[in-house]
Image (cartoon, rainbow, N blue to C red; front, side):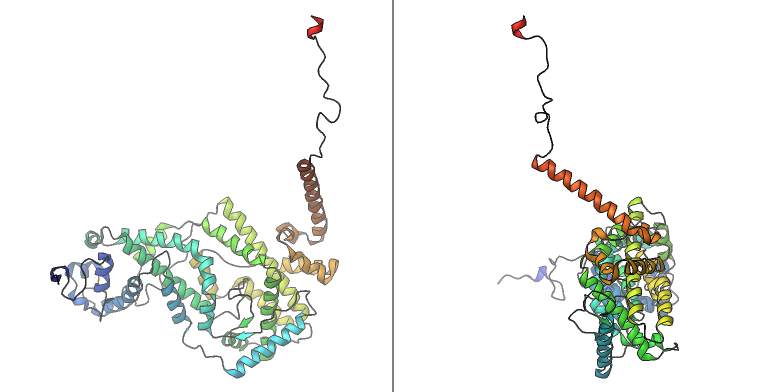
Length: 474
């Protein structure tokens, strides 16, 4: 057998393994490959560059944070977001006071869901889904919704990760730039890990605040109704309303959202498409990124998670973004306005319904701290800014068209009301008839053209040969 000793490292690993030397160096440096490293062993010039040569505790704190980042990088996951780290960070942020759902609590949620569905049967023409209500923990909410967050943030993540990569490379101390030359792949992975950590922290914060799967106006966890009982209970603690009334009212909202998205399956892609169109035009303010990275406090072990993200997006919108934003805000308002009206009708006999309706209107229109933090991260607030106008619109449609006529407006995306319809609900029917007449005339003209039904010069007798001298008259 040939002796391959010269091709092997002392630890038995193969020199020919295809490894990123910079990622391997940082993994070893920050303890990613084993039990960690003493910061005192760093070269003095690097300690000086990092500003912590006289503060071993601060160095250790930073190393613990970097170990998590480098561990994520060592996993081999690439792309603008390290999703494994995002999920782990979200679970950590949602952890703590996250009680497991007990069997009695699950039964209480299921009972509230069945009653909510029964009340909704008289308030909408949309039938109830076959799936029953389920109760989940905050950590389970993270797991169930993460696939949707991937869709909603992918375009923003790509822009953010590229900006972070550039800024980290440019902001490196001069003493270290020589060591890091050519480490583009490492910086990309580190940028993806940092954004994943930020995104996960934001989603984990939302997990402590949301009631179910549809709080932002989209079915984040699929078309099955669910509630997070820990958050529902926390919301109702300081209210005058009885706990059962709060639970039932929130179950009504969740069930109404699910019925709408089940009956109008095109609606989810309509909203997501507007979000994606807006996100594609987002530009990152590089000066803000650089400032944020300079402000990282190595003595704070959470400094990477807490890195400021507000104001990173340039405020100027492109025309395409303005169009997408208007489409998104109108759609969100129409969704929330319809749910608001339907739930108000279904809960008419609930003593606390009026107060709860107003409270949740305000909550949805302003958002809590967690939702605002998420908006700062992705550069977009998912707010139904015209919720009250949309509620008035659906109220008018009910008076004019009845229950089935109102809900039939959701039957096709071409019937989607516009911002003009929110301004003037009474004129919606007239504008819709005019639009349908124009479409009918266009279809008729197109059919004639395709079938040869239009008169041609040969058909009307006006195509006689021109008079003039002929050969016979010469």
